[in-house]
Length: 284
Image 1 (cartoon, helix red, strand yellow):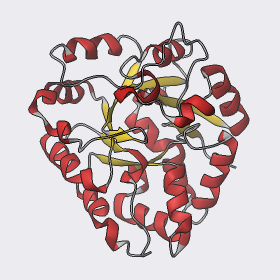
Image 2: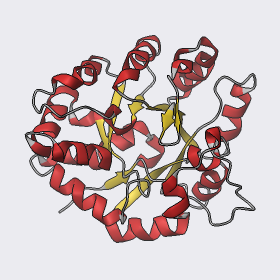
Image 3: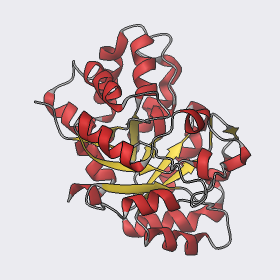
Image 4: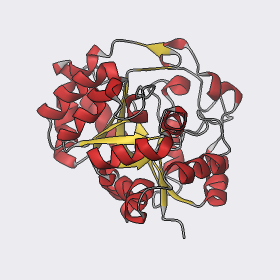
């Protein structure tokens, strides 16, 4: 019997470009959103087929920039099953007002998008003190911050983890670790060093599956190492679908293979238990 699955990293894109205009961050739309996007109804259908109970839908910054309306209106249709992880400009003078607006419109978490396939920055704005009032608000209400970064950006995440020890920080794609050398994964020592911060969590996605399967020792060795260092209760599954090419069921099956050597209890945490810590509204 498979554990309850909560997907904390699917994306949706509407076919209605009039109501939801395409306005990607940095002006460059992601290839996946233009060629293999799915809408909210398709996501529901694929979740049902794949046995995914709930989801924290991650707003697509490379489609809509800071306009979270499509995810917000979708979440509002079924808030028992969905929450939204939104993006907005934390450096803007009215950032706290924007925070409150999206909080009233289904925001369950905030994603700090420092770069992706269409947009790369050094991410130094992450630790700009102008953003700290948003972090303080997250600490007050228990909201999770999601950070997309690479190994190179982890020193900044470390600064934030120290400064805001009560804010849960989830790192997208396990910070895209370098696993070429196999165990003990010396090239990713910075990632494992983050485990000392109890408020840091890792998001395991198909990008992580692919890297682990291709590395010496394979997925069994890498995920055993992650669990031994972080604990399964700080690891959570996110499909990254459809940015990661699906269908969703295929990505879930890849996860079953990658986690096969873990204990039943550890798998239950990764598939759904940790998601309920990061997004308590999905635990109801």
